[in-house]
Image (cartoon, rainbow, N blue to C red; front, side, top):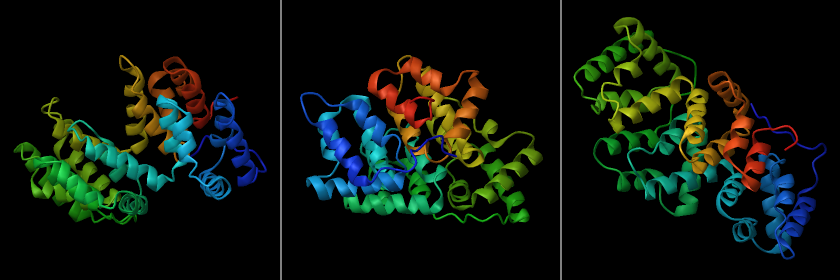
Amino acid sequence: MSTLTFPSPLPSPSEDCEQLHKAFEGWGTNEGLIISVLAHRPAAHRREIRRAYAEIYGEDLLKPLDKELTRDFERAVLLWVLDAAERDAVLANEVVRKWSPGNRVLIEIAVVRKTEELLAAKRAYQVRFKRCLEEDVAAHTRDEYRKLLVPLVSTYRYEGAEVDKSLSKSEAKILHQKIKDNDYSHEDVIRILTTRSKAQLLATFNDYHNEFGNPINKDLKADPKNEFLSAMRAIIRCIICPEKYLEKVIRLAISKTGTDEGALSRIITTRAEVDMKQIKDLYYKRNSVALDSAVKKDTSGDFEDFLLALIGHEGA
């Protein structure tokens, strides 16, 4: 559920383009005007603004934004202006080019997104980078990570509610045995986590807990410093409750010594129109502090103003 508020009626895309063009003119950029327009327009309208801007001024809106804005504010605005699929494609490309075992962005994109959203992101990846995402993931990862991540981004999960009870019980046993044997990257473990529907996996995880006494993620904490086990736990958390996982990403981004602005921008720009209200509610429940207040404390200037507008801060 979105927390954004939009003016009613919305200005025409050409009117918004005129305002944005004014913001770029003169000696200094009018960042407040940019925020007042872009942070308060839904995705379909932002797409029309970008199309109209190219028609009227002869260049992609991204170019003046890239030229006139700086640092964290620039990155957040550029991500926000992109269509959701193109945004995910850009984020995925950044990750594979500078891939490290501790990065979870590919897992977010592959597991949190709906099946059609992942497919759209992969199409956008091909259009923008002239390669397929699976190809780049295979080229830039290795060993057990390649075994896990290539099928994860290749999958086309069934999204219905139907569950095979006998299958969930048998696969809970397979997962338990492989975890017990420390055979975490076994092909059966990879196959189950990367191909089964989320409903089927939830049933499997429930059977695992009921049959063996521990949640599966507790058994995967045998070695807290093992990044591969951490990646597997992230996949499972994204399947069980993606909003809780995303709240934790925000919490860690804010609670670190020095804010992780990249993670903060990524979650807020990708979820502002999806489930930001649930994430905000979970954040408050977990931290006894409103997300708005935490963002205000840890950010500043135009970047702060923009993020507050996207998370629905009153008056932003």
